Image (tube, rainbow, N blue to C red; front, side, top):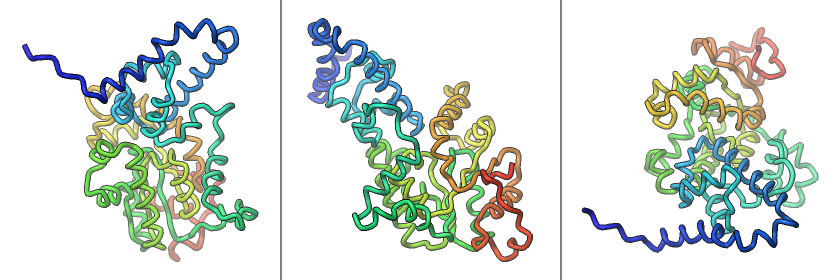
Amino acid sequence: MEPPRKKTAATRDRRRNETGAAAREPKAKAAREPLAGPRESALHALLAQRVRDARARRFMTRKALAEQSGISLAYLARLESGTGNITLGLLQRLALALNLPMESFLADGEPPNADFTMIVEFLRRQPPERLANIRRQLFDGRDAQRVALVGIRGVGKSTLGPLLAKRLGVPFVELNREIEKEANLGASEIFSLYGQRGYRALERSCLERILVNHPNVVLATGGGIVAEAATYELLLGSFFTVWLKAKPRVMFERVLAQHDARIASTQLRFEAVDNIKRTLEARRHLYELADASYDTSGKAPGEIVSALISLLPVEQQPSSDREGAPPRSADGSGA
């Protein structure tokens, strides 16, 4: 029989943190409950909802969050069900793993809408003398020669991006590949070694370099970029953005063909479409901030590219496409 493994100091510390609050709770419960019991339950429910939402926006499994935060899977399950009594230390680990400020989990009231979040992130980077004109600068500072495609994996960004770039006569850049080249690692290895926080820092750095090096470009972004407020604000302020959409079943079939183990493995096949729907709903309000949108379901690449060109500002369209270009619909989709 194999001898039992010795517990490391990190393991002992983790279990002490997770169980300490639970062990002390019965003694303090009677003193707290008359004044704070209902409020505390509501706070637990709020925290549970926000953790679930943050995971969904990042398309992150509970197991992945457990691995990147160092918090046990069982404890995360209690936390997301509203029964876990979290400590500040564990909350900090959770925030770091999800690359979110700690206060975002516990702030009073409903979470701010996407417009508010984008504006706040933009404001934080501005000197005082520019604050009076901030709203105008947020929308008027965009370079009309850059196009960014956003959307969940499976909508066709990597396929359509090069075709669109060729029609426009500009380079095509895929942000995920730039991140991998920067780190000299695959995406899964980056997440494994550096976690969500490290990957998003590389994403921001690569986007800033693209802005410097490419005044004219078509950029395919990763699906989760919209969940990073500061990076998404930079994207929205520097590119004409197009949200590519597709029906969940269509996205699943495309990703299945790409052998994406995250949602297309045999074990996850039956729940994959539901996973895509949940992620789409969690991110919808962020994708809707794009300048235009287009549903790629059931359409040929050539047809889609022609439609995308018609959505662009007139000055950005190739001269051969400007004559008789139809006006854009309000939602940019033409449907």
